[in-house]
Image (tube, rainbow, N blue to C red; front, side, top):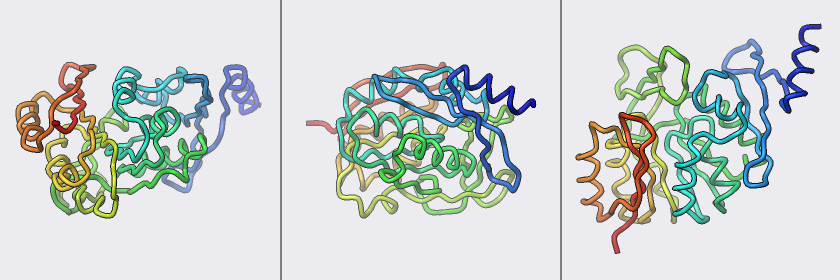
Length: 255
């Protein structure tokens, strides 16, 4: 009876209640939220209503709409590389609204990667996404996932090394991971203060493909980031600050 009541309430709100196996033998209840964006139908699976990104989906919108609009001013088709894809907020938007033909998504956290796969399937986008269950850094090695206490998947950090607390994962360089990709339109990097290592591991890709990039930069890394951008013969085209401790930069090749 309770199950029927919950399902009926969700239906009146425009949601579907489903049961999804998330990383274990037990089933976990979640909600598929559906909304319109730019006249198109969008759907996301919400497992945790307190998660920053999933909460925005539950409320009927994309997370970080200003950042998505900024990306949209510079991305028009081609291949989009999503480093730190999380549950797919940016990948889904790029595929549905920015004419992107393919996404290569890097997400090392199995819990986020499972939701990513569900969200791509819900929007009929799975065939256009290549997901790699790995993170990017400046070398190939074992690493650990350090999850926040409040269960916000987007705040999970990767620490390089095979010791310490946290679930084991794997990182490699973007140059190695993307060596067979001939052309890249844009690389989005949101890696919780690991952006410098990720960028260094992509040096060859920036030289070879000259993609634009959208990078979340921790304030402590700002000067080193700008020096690296200059060394790659790139410049900052736009920036947008949402939080007090970091800023998003859209960088483009000079000339």
